[in-house]
Image (tube, rainbow, N blue to C red; front, side, top):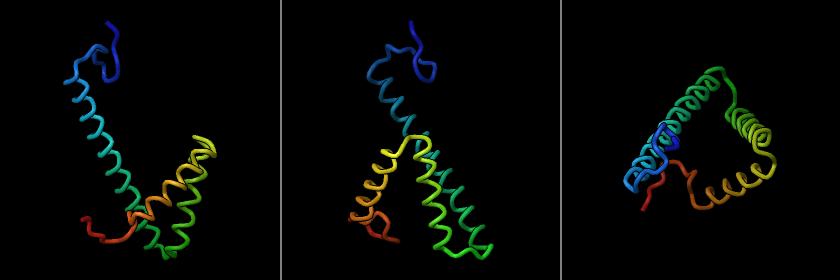
Length: 100
């Protein structure tokens, strides 16, 4: 019997699929948490070094988009920028926003 992701048998049941989905979500959330922690630390270090917020943001955004283009191509950058604009329109980046 073939082995799939995580070393599990490929012919798993619906419950197995739901469990993998739950595990995948937990792994993704942990990765997001770690990324936020790394970013926060780098941000605090840059601020402590006296770097202006605008410079940090510009370098971060430029660097991220260049890396995204290098790995996934310009179409991925275009898609990400459009998605980012949509997220801004719905208020995702409003500090201390209250969800209703």
